[in-house]
Image (cartoon, rainbow, N blue to C red; front, top):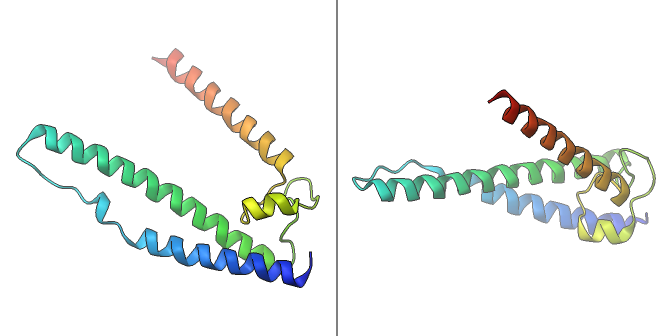
Amino acid sequence: MTKTELNKYRSILEEKQAELEQVIRNREAITIEKSPDALDEVQHAAERELAIRNLDRESNLLRNVRAALRRMDDGSYGVCLHCEEDISPKRLNAVPWTPYCIQCQEQADRNREELNDSLDDLLVNAA
């Protein structure tokens, strides 16, 4: 990867990092609001749950962005952490913080789905 390409990705990642840090600082949506109306409380709880999920997703993305910046610093950016092959420029353009090539990411996703299915089966059988 050329220095120009690396600088382009670094700029994108630093911009994304700043954006995510700003979003994560705003936690007003997860405050608990009391209401005399039970339906309002249910709606507030649903909105709070959605805000918590969004905060969790953004926090995970921020961790991935920071990890990508660390890989840039140690010289391993753009190389799949699993198979150690170069990650395609097309994939890096789409997801600059990705630690895996597309094949390894698809395998990781399949493994995660299988694990979730197994856990669901265990929980159903335990009930």
